[in-house]
Image 1: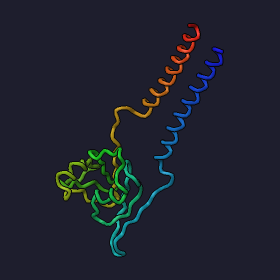
Image 2: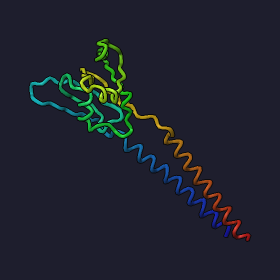
Image 3: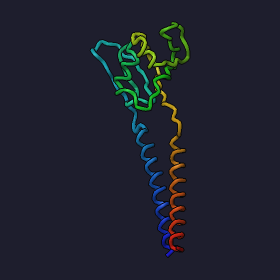
Image 4: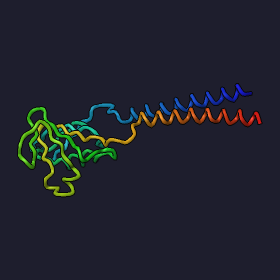
Length: 175
C-alpha cells in the first residue's frame, strides 16, 4: 500500500511539473512574431512617407511607413499603444543612417534615451519628431523576480508538498 501511495504521489508530481513547463512554453510562443509585420499610414497620396522600425513592448511591433515629422507618441498610438510591461522611462531611439537629433539640445547622437512619461507630464509639445530609418525600442520593465526563478520556486514547492504529504500519510498509518 505504501508503494502504491508513493507511486501515485510521484506520478502526480511529474504531471504537475511538466504541466507548469508546458504553460511557460505556450506563453513564450505567444509573444514571438510569427511573421514580419508592416504597416502603412498615409493621409493623402502626395504625402511623403518615412520608414520607422518599432520594437519591444508595444502591441504591434513592426516596420511602419508613416508621414514625415510624425511624433513618437502618435506612432505608439498607431501601434495600439504599449503593453503593461513597457518601461516608458527608457524609450531608446537609434538611426542606422545618420545620428539622432535631440529635440532639447539640437545635437546629433548615435542613440537617444527618452523619458516618455516625463515628456507627457511636462510638455507634450516636446515629443520627439521621428526621422527616416529611426529604430524605436520600448524596453520592458525589470521585474523583481524573473520567470525562471518563479518556475523553479513552483517546482520546488510541489516537490516539498508531495514529500511532506507522503510523510504525513505514513505517520498516520503508523498511529
